[in-house]
Length: 172
Image (cartoon, rainbow, N blue to C red):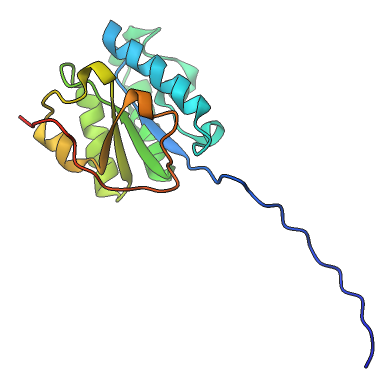
C-alpha cells in the first residue's frame, strides 16, 4: 500500500455567526431619536449582528445627503425616488428586519417598511423602549412582527435563533 501525503485545508471556525439587519426607525422627534441612538448602541454591541454589512437607512441616503440634515430634500423627486429604492433594496438584501417601534409615535415610513419586509418573508423584530413596552400597538404592526422585545434586550438578543412570540400588550 502506497503512503500518500495529503494536505488538509484548515477551515476557520466562526464562534458566532452574525446576521445582517435592516434597521427601521423614525428620527423625527426627540423620543424617536433617543430610541434610535439606544438601538444603534445595542446593535453595535450585539455579536449576532453583522453591523458592518447591515443596512441603516440614514447611512444610505442618495448621494450621502441625509434628510434629517437637509429637510428640503423631501421636495426633490430624484433624491426621494433613489432613497426609497435604495431602502427597498436594503430590506430585500438583509437577513432580518429590525424596527424600533414607539407605540405613541408610529412612523408611517416604518409601517411601509414593515409591510414590505413581511411580503418578502423576512424575520421581523419590533424593538420597543422599555418604558413603552406593554402599551397598545397598532394591529397591523403587531400582526407582521414575529417577535417584540424590550430595548434593554436588544444587546443580547440572539438573531441566530429566531423565535416567534406574542407581544404582551394590547392592540388597537
